Length: 416
Picture: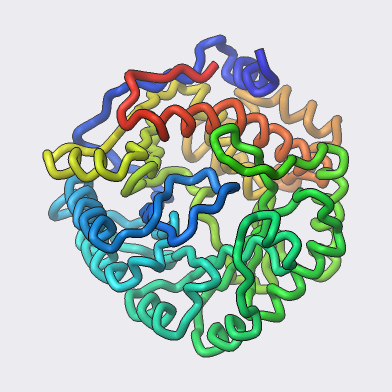
């Protein structure tokens, strides 16, 4: 039994694994969900990066149009007529959503028939997408936040990642012409021979180039990707993560999750830290109070399923109460903070009643501090969260995505 299995078994007080079945609800009961978010997946790219684990394929205009047509039908299948549900946010991820920028407005218009978006709309871009035409199209469609997948400004790391060089100064000039609420830039850390000075340079170049928010994600060596990159050892990774965090805090940058910092109190970009969410498109996941479901990764099978009038769900997990609590705590902690009041509001029971001993142990080990019912990670706690997340990713997500990339609708899956 691996580390993540031991942790899961202890926290859920059960040896029962996560069991995904080839089934789904024809009607998704999200009406009573609070803090509900929306996610739309666009799986097309002009280049397939070897390090990227997400569902994607090479862009083809005809196929992309058929996909968008099916996506709109899926939204209508899930949406409830006559009821406009308030949602916190809408995020477009991929892939490269900007490749279909001319149809983003159409997708958003359909979503607005069923949902009221209260906290903005975000979209991911490749640096090559940062043009006046594309940004203007996204802005007109209602996009308020953008996230640019920089990965690194350094030529040596772009080469390692198989990414092309881009004109940073030109990108910066274009960004100055548009007033987005959030301009986030993504970077990868823990690459071979990467130093603190390399990352510090990336951070400062990002903020000087028009970003008000940055995300620094660790490189994870998924078994199904073809990346030749060797993962950094844990000791070096912890030192790098600690130095990045301390540097950002010293500079006055606000930390709003394990990997993200901003130089503005209003800038934020995260499609993950939500209590419930609906996912549309290939590989998109949906998380509700009692279930987690994930759509097929196969674009053609996705289109076929939608055209038959059925949801493209590939697998569904029905939570036990303890499993849902662990899932809630894990992803809420991604923000580096857990408020006991939020837990009690969501589950109707006190957090300490279920996890009081674990909280006290975490305090004694120096993993968290407490202030008025809010538990916040220390530097040590943030590293061990990363450590657990890395195990979780390789033990669960790697296995799930690896299977689903090969089978459109697997018979089932057990994650122990």
